[in-house]
Length: 97
Length: 85
Image (cartoon, rainbow over all chains, first blue to last red; front, side, top):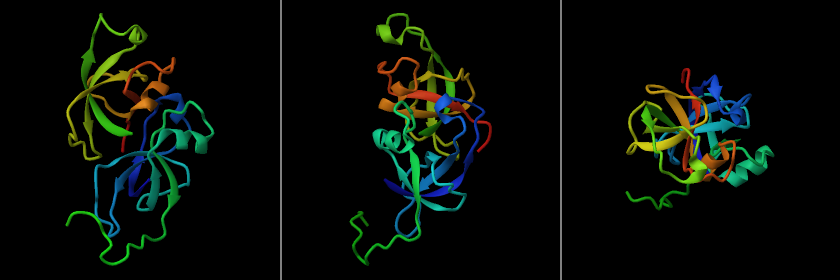
């Protein structure tokens, strides 16, 4: 899962049936300090996240299909939580400086 | 799931049988600022997208789940034509 910031809605009237009635949002992966850390992508919302929220995004199909209870959903990124706080212990970051 | 721009279509008469009848599109993967993120790729179409459309795609196994007949050997599928973002 990734911690991401919600940038805005993605509106598509012509879409695959599995996305009909579902909200999709643009999300930007961020690090513990809130800085952008990776490519922006699209996630389906499952927790009523809004623009500016910091969210938890699951990027694995079978787990998503279990959560959605849709065995054939092609969804591959699902917002599964709204993050209140990320507490990275000082100096614990393993990322290359 | 990622953004993309449809560059054109790909026609292959000689191909894996399961791919028969599936439209193939040439797509440039993008980020939300519509900047290219990696090389263009071929994706199958599930929403009648055309050249110039800004779309979103799903990759890996989930791409095959997006097709009417699942477990067709595809690793990218266009699943939405974006109106605005």
